[in-house]
Image 1 (cartoon, rainbow, N blue to C red):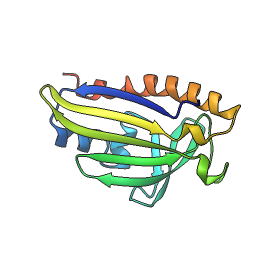
Image 2: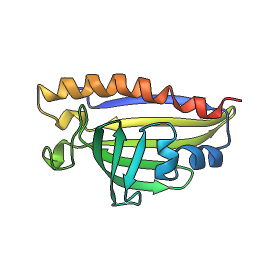
Image 3: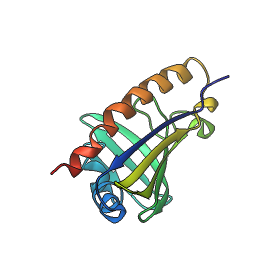
Image 4: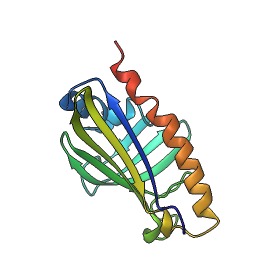
Length: 145
């Protein structure tokens, strides 16, 4: 059975409204910790690009609910445009924010890997699993004193 999702959780020492504004509520907020740059339409249904140096991934924003949820789709594992592979092979990345006694719980789930054919499935899962560990480690640095 193929693994379908990557899940990570972390607690940030700030109120949920602050975490939303600083880290998820706009393309600039997302670029403050995740990609180096976000360009394009950062509204639900909009297409935007995330860039790391010369690497540029095309994404579609699915959901943007202030202070609770940000969700987008992309093709995982490498630098792809939305039309690089069939639509059914897109994964969905969802960030869910909820209040926590120590600030804000951020849960990240990237799902849809089971729809990616082999051998790209194993590559995408490995690349994104390690990638999320690396990228999410940057997020708490925004909240250090």
